[in-house]
Image (tube, rainbow, N blue to C red; front, side, top):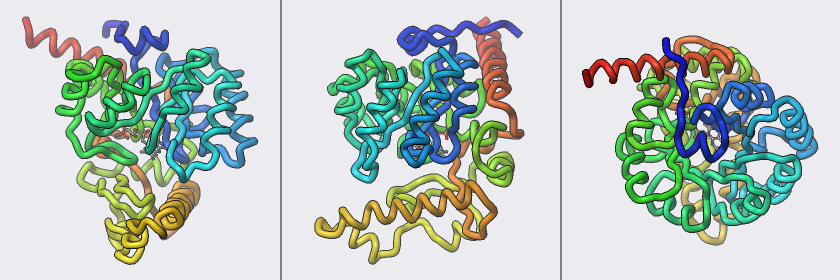
Length: 332
Ligand SMILES: Cc1cc2nc3c(=O)[nH]c(=O)nc-3n(C[C@H](O)[C@H](O)[C@H](O)COP(=O)(O)O)c2cc1C
C-alpha cells in the first residue's frame, strides 16, 4: 500500500498532515480522542459544553495543550441557549486553541476574536445562503453538513452540496455527513472538498466517553435505522431508532410546538426543550436506561468494529489509498 501525502488548501492553512477533522460531538469527544486525532495528523475537536462546570473545561484545555503540540479545535454553539459562549471562547483563546467550529447561530464574534490571534474559524452550514453569509463575515472555511450526517443533518445530498458550495465560495469547503470510509474521503475530495469532518465513526472508538452499549449500537445499526427527531433539541436530529425512539415520535407535541413558535413564549420554551433533550441524551450515553436515545448518522452502515482513534485514522488512510489506486486503474 502506498504512503499517502495529502495536500489541500486545508492541510496548508492549518499545517496538518491529513485534511480530516474528528468532528466535535456532544458527550462523545473528550481529551483522549482530541489528542489522538491531532497526533494522528488530523485535527481533534470537542464541544466546549462537554466539560461542565466551566472549571473542568479550562482544565481540559490545559491538559490537551500539554499533551499535543499539533493544532486542536473547540466547538462553540453560538445560539442563545449557550450562556457560556463568551467565556468559552476567551478561555480557548487564552489557552492557545488553533481552530474553532461554530454551530447553530451567528459566528461573527468568534471570527473577530479568533482572528486577533490568528486562530481559524470554520462554520457549520447546510445551504448556500448561510455559507455566503459566513464567508462575508470572514470565516476561514465552511463545514458543509449534508444529509445523512449525525447531529443536525442538513437536507441536501453531499453529492450536490459540496460542488454547489465549491462553485460559489472562495474559502475552503469541508465535507461532513455520512463519512466513515476512506473511499468517501477520496470521493469528497473529487467533488471539490478541501477536507472532511468525521463524527459518527469516532463514536465507535475506544476513546469516546460513552457506554460500550452505545458504541456497539453504532456498529450494529443500519442506515435505515437512522431517523430524525425534533424531540431532543427542538430541531431535527439523527438518532438510532429503537422502541423508545418510536414511542417518543419525530415531532414535538403540538402544544410545545405552538409555544415554541409564539414570540412571547419562544425564549423560555426553546432553552427548556434543549435542557430536557440534553439530559435524555446524557443519560443514554452514560448509563443503561430504558429511555435510550443514541445520536448517530447514516455512516453507521460502514462501521463494523470499535477501534482506537489511531486505528481509525490508519484504516481511513489505507482505504483512501485503495480507492485512489482503483481510480488510477479505471483511467488506464
Ligand atoms: C453524537 C453526536 C453529537 C454531536 N454533537 C455536536 C455538537 O455538540 N456540536 C456540533 O457542532 N456538532 C455536533 N455533531 C455533529 C458533528 O460535529 C458532525 O458535523 C457530524 O457528526 C458529521 O456527520 P457524521 O456523523 O455522519 O460523520 C454531533 C454529531 C453526533 C453524531
